[in-house]
Length: 347
Image (cartoon, rainbow, N blue to C red; front, side, top):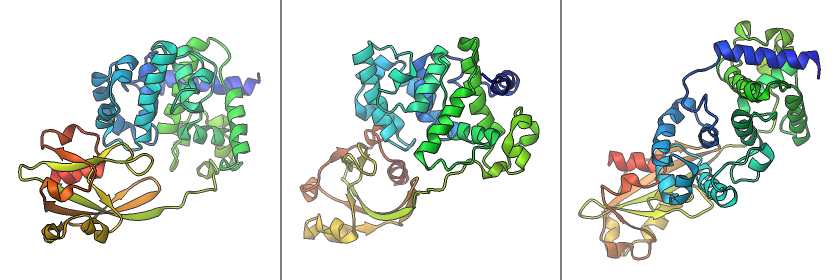
């Protein structure tokens, strides 16, 4: 235990007490269910967005047992618009396993938590630190940025051995005393610093409590950290959407296959080309097809160019398609991809 590591932990804890974020609905709780839910929702998602979803989700699924009993369709419906829907599928699977394996009580160690669906090392560490005071590190994107800058850690995090080395250093910096009180404060402090001070661009070094300890700041190059060279290439895909509607206004929707784009969600029938969409319909109905303006939906590593094609159709015209009619009062409660919900709402 070095004096430097203890100075680091003490500064983070002290700063969080006076300057850390307050008032987020998942803070100041030792309820593993709420911490777990917030950690999953906050992956790749802005806090402002999660602030809308978190309370609604809790009202519908107030604890892990209620969530485990729910259908996946109900979970996806409430998740609709948050994106990264594998998170919702794993959330439901995890709830089922917590009830089946642990009687509805989350295990108290990060090692056990990592055996559950959708809970990686950093999420497990957050739950264990916040709820059980375990001396265990987290390493989400914000925390990686704080630690690599303070440590001057310039090894490429695209290399697995380098990331493991950063985990080791993150663990060495953890508090050693009064862990039940210190670990939640320390963990929240690192998150808060990354979110409000140690920003990716224009970091607030002058107000940072770690300024005197920060190697990157002394070098005058904080924005060069963290180093990660491997970048996923963006791709693009064009899809045609059959927006079939009945005389009473019902919409034809089908559940998307797993795996794939929008897996497990209800969606308009999807085709790789306008020709494939047209070929699906009997000849006598093809003249009814009307092309709506195309639009682009941006995913993390892919741009989807979506081409809606609308038509009034009877059920007999859709005999070869999977799916069913959903009335105007039914489809809003389904788990729909955000661009499909927007399209139908506009229509």
